[in-house]
Image (cartoon, rainbow, N blue to C red; front, side):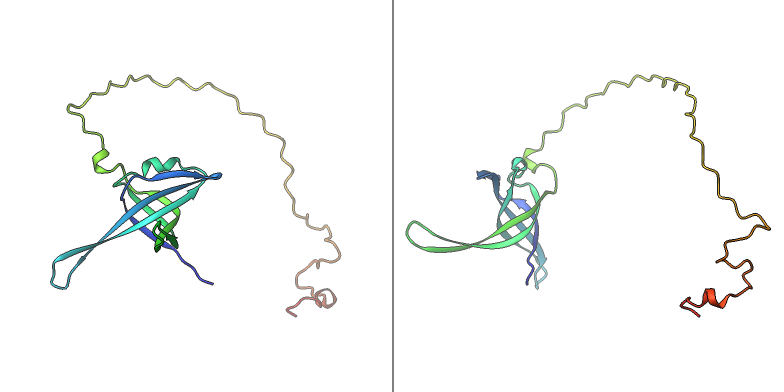
Length: 179
C-alpha cells in the first residue's frame, strides 16, 4: 500500500477552462512554480516547473477566479496519461489531479482596479444615543428540589454500611480486591 500527495503553490499560466462531463465539471488550468536559489558561484538562479492541473467537482463556479497570474495552492496526486496523436505517435504526460484548490491572494497585478485620483470623503456618521432598554421583570423560577440532607446523628445507616469506620467486618470486606 502506498501514499501519494503533492502540494504546489504558484501562479496560473492561463485562464482556467471548465467543461461539463455527465453530472460533474472538470476545471483545467496550468500552474507555474518558480524556485529561487543561489548558485555555487554566488549568483542568483531560478528554475520554473510547469504543471497541468485538473479538478473534478459538482460546481465549477470558482473557475472564473483562476485567471492568468492568480496565485493558487493546489494539492492532489500525479497521474500519467497516454494518448495517440493523429499521425499515430504515442505520447505520455503527467497531470496533477487536484483534491484541493485554494486561491492565495487578490487579483493579479493587471486586473487590480486603479487607485482613485482624489480621496472621496465619507459622510460623517450621525450619532444617536441608544434607546433605553425596556424594563422587564425576571421570569419566575420553577421550584428547586430539596437538597440532599446528611443522616442525622443517632439514626442508623443501612445494615451493609458499618456505623463506625473502625469497625471492620471481615465478611463484608472479604470480596474487595485489595485485601
